[in-house]
Length: 531
Image (cartoon, rainbow, N blue to C red):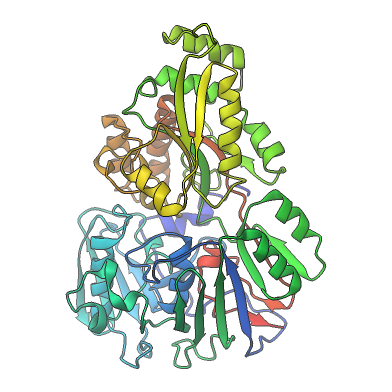
């Protein structure tokens, strides 16, 4: 993916954002979209529920963005577009965002959407969503009238507009979720769900399928085009590929397996694209538990990094579809820097570094033992890389046991309780470092929760850099702070970055307007139609 220019996204990252057009969606096509039809999508991701206000991740976001509308949405060039809010303005000081809501929007039960629902939802997200930095500066939401919501922040918050995205800011009905029950375990997260998006949920079979039907009173006239969306869920990715080839599925997102990508690229009635994943910014990495010896020694971490050939991983193990990644901010971000500390593969140097660190090999050639875990369900990005690392480290005298987890909850528990030495992981940038990057490195975010700072990395200078960058609205100044941060982190190596995850979407050529915005498959499907 090519680097986007800084000026291209200034409207998102700068101090002032003003809505331009009330039009929404992709540029007009020559072909008139048709109404009707059922879109069947395949997924290996199993959601516990569909409430994206209290849960992150692909599994929840795909259905949540169909059921719940958000204030804004984004096109494929990172530009914000109207959605529930027909216009908006970020104050010059970056400390308040005014949302002017549509007056014709209603929830699936017919009740009108008001600023009170927006205020309730944003404060609920702040209190419950795992991305604590996303709404961190938000102090309150004023509601001067039924269709105006003003988000007030304690400090300038350059990511607040992006935080209004479908996958990050679903607007919940206050009259249902404001009943005092725990939002994370609310019964209406899976049963009789009421949202305001283009589709309403009519069936939720845990771990099997989700059925969504067109909401006829959706606030965008004439949309959605589809009658129904069915999400078929199975952990067996191979069966999903076969179903797509047979025509039982019409869309399969988040494909990474090289054999599947090569195979699907040759199927005549399918299209295959890597577009639609820029906002996600997924990185495949090796995380170290810094509380455990010998990994608490930075020289040991550097020696391990020096034994790993990232080019071999991306070319041989991933079929050339993946690209090497060297830092915590994905290269497609205008806030990324190329001035990073890198570790070219050199087994002799790695061994000498371990010697110098005081970890001499014994008579059997062994220096010490470690375990490596991996996120289940993505063997090409996770298990295969873990096995490769095991073999490479054996060459320099480190014995590694590859530990499999039965399922995601089992792996997540190990991460949350810091019960690991090393672990492969796939983590998203989520469009802005404030949302997806800060959480991994801030010492204040060392928590017993997966996808926080489970490495127990602590550097006061890094904390200062991130906290300062998070309060700057000038993208040039922000980039300078992030450049220093990236240099420190790639030198201290709480994480060794391996590759950009090569997500692709395969879909039937009968489909029009498949989602290729920055949020891709985690966008509303109101534009999709059958030709």
